Amino acid sequence: MEINEIGVVKNDVQETKKHSFFRDVESTIEVKEEFVDGLQEIDRSDYLQVIFFFSRSKDYNLVGPRHGGKVRGVFASRSPRRPNNLGSTVVQLLFHDGNKLRVKGLDAIDGTPVIDIKPYAAPFDSSSPPEEKKKNPRREINRLVKTGDLENLLLKAGELHGHYCPFLALGVTAGSYAVNELGETPGDMEELVAVLETNSCFSDGIQYSTGCTFGNNALVYRDYGKTAVTMAIRGDRGVRLYYKRDNYLEENYPERTELFEKVVKEREGTEEDERALKRAWAEIAFDLVHVPAEELFKIEQIRTPDLPDYAPIFEDEYCDLCGEKFMAPKGESADGESTLCIPCAGDSYLQLNGSGLREVS
Ligand SMILES: [Zn+2]
Ligand SMILES: [Zn+2]
Image 1 (cartoon, helix red, strand yellow):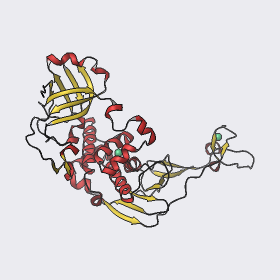
Image 2 (cartoon, helix red, strand yellow; image 1 turned 120 degrees about the vertical axis):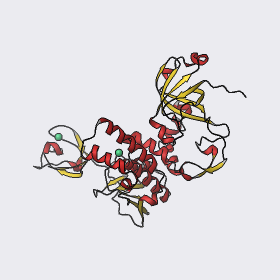
Image 3 (cartoon, helix red, strand yellow; image 1 turned 180 degrees about the vertical axis):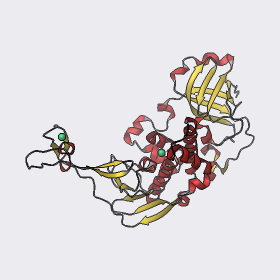
Image 4 (cartoon, helix red, strand yellow; image 1 turned 90 degrees about the vertical axis):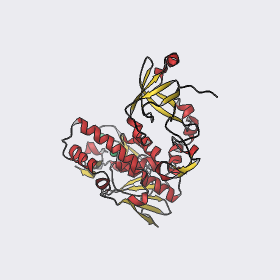
């Protein structure tokens, strides 16, 4: 077997770093002249699979503690120390110019030899082919929850949440812990219910990891303003997790806290500060998912959880004024004759926003 280097990685990273560090790192892959023709039409791909050589890795363990301290076989890990020292990562292609490919997310240090490049094709390379996904859209998420792969779960939860932050990570941690503790596989039914006590970033981590959402009525919201959730199975038991480490971030990341005060609380940060905070948040989030839930949360078993009934199916009504359809119990016929929707009647209503659940009149 003969393998030739087709190019080399150029970036600012000189030392080996944690995998998550590389997520935002941009690198240039310089392809050797004799292979440049092979890049024709590569711009059609937004993502590439890059195979490279961990040139600094010398030895390896077939079984050993990996990232996060868990003991695993080398083929069940992304460790750079492997029998053939090959790394493989899906990266974002930013642009292509001559023999140079500018990419983002390549977890290789400066000078790493590149062995192969291929377009990343979701139907072949992703673990959930579309047909499987149609049968169970949460298959991949549930697998990540079950196997405790919280790093990849957080990575996906960011697609919903829009950014990576510590409280999203806490939500993912709490949700996964509770689902595993209850031994229930989240589906699309309302048997598994989440009772959330906050509408902060935490709530998106819970919705993503448990499948209990605002839209499928498996999410109950109690406006307590606590970073806490009770996960429960209808007619059975539940478990409540309350985030107990109020000062965890201040203690472990003091400089980040100062940045947070400046940018968010005092609104005095520069654009550079904001970017730095975003990076710091993401870094902390990806650290946090490796902290055991027991260290972060007060965890209580709930024998008979207090849950509201299943969501009822409402009759429809039409508003006499605007003609729009609404769920019957939400409107009124003030004079006993006309049927009006809430806005047309000018009635007060409940609104869930950044302040929580508030009556608006
Ligand atoms: Zn957030
Ligand atoms: Zn109306």
